[in-house]
Image 1 (cartoon, rainbow, N blue to C red):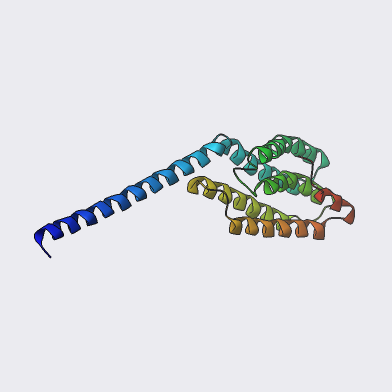
Image 2 (cartoon, one colour):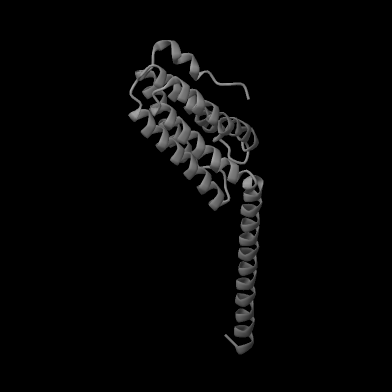
Length: 188
């Protein structure tokens, strides 16, 4: 190989590496832009979503531990705002957080379920623990989707589905049969 051929080969290799580097840079920039755009789609809902999730779970647990019907009514009224907010946000984040809107609807029902358990004087320790676990799972899915800049993972949604089933089973075990119609989905 002559010096001229070696120079041409070195230039071709350098050009190939430059092109690969350019393509990698463009792809990385596109991926970063896509993640940022995804985050912006539900960034404005993040604060109210977080507050509503935590408030709903907290009021559900307090309702379950409250003995007096008057006090339960007071806590039901306090739970109304976060419940309504969750129902509203479930519609708004349906597409950015694909698969999570049903779970937000379920979260909005927790105070009602806790109230039925308390009215039936049923033990609520298992229900409270499952509600905390479910809320933490929903919170983790939202946080992960935001940090990754991508919709929730199917594996995470399946875990939430399983937790929702355990909560419903706990409610069914400890509640009178007439309360099972509470599982009917509300119209969005």
